[in-house]
Length: 355
Figure 1 (cartoon, one colour):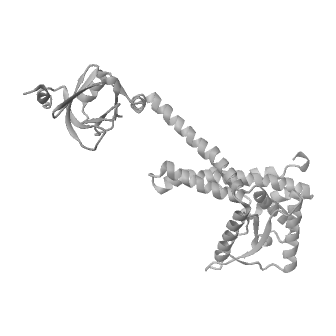
Figure 2 (tube, rainbow, N blue to C red):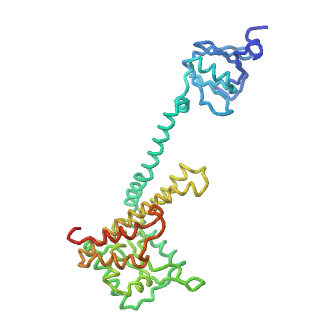
Figure 3 (cartoon, rainbow, N blue to C red):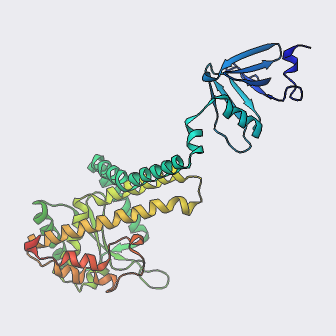
């Protein structure tokens, strides 16, 4: 009986380890007996033998119940069933583990890696996403934004809105003030104003409350309910319109759309295997944070525009926030779509001379 044959029996040579060998040229699996011999690893197969220097072998990362894989520099692979004896012999043989094996075995490196990954994810969410939204929105052609805004308004009309019921004279007065504010900010028409009534639900209540918002494509929607809430006061409505013009000028609607889409995609990429709520929560929280920043920018713009137009921004602090209630929501700040009312009021009550 030859030495090669002896080495195929683990009970005769306990220092040998029976496994499977792949030559890297085909998918054929061949039985092999592996012996760790100092600076070499000896491989004994049916009718063939091979000695490989340990510096030409890399050991796979240790995983529970997974076989140990010896990757040889020429592309061949030897798979061995994991066992405490084998793992101990590998440590003694001088075989170099992979970088990941070193990381897994050093808790300090594991913690450092986790901290680095957490920092990178935070940078992606807090800084990269807003930049992507800003650059992406600027790259979208105006005609595409206009089509998106038109389609969005059509969808809102189909579900929530009806034609405005305001008297013609009042519609004209609001439109004129809107154009004047637009001209005061840029010297030319900045956006198109759309007046809408809100439909009622089955219970007779309006589907949405008093509201105004901006859409992609430089469109601002103002509801009849908001006009009624402010008793048709043009100066009070000017604060609402100035705020929405701020969103239009800074392209917040298009940026918000891109930010939400990119945030959802990033969460799916990073957390796709987690349950839906857990996977989408980071994108939702970051979108809320982005929305609060956009609202603050629009408030700042409205303050400055009202000063230019000759109105006191403090009126906006009194009337713009009134429809939302005098007190702040009980929700913590990070769960709100708007900054706390107290912060908004403080910003809007700054004196015009102070900017």
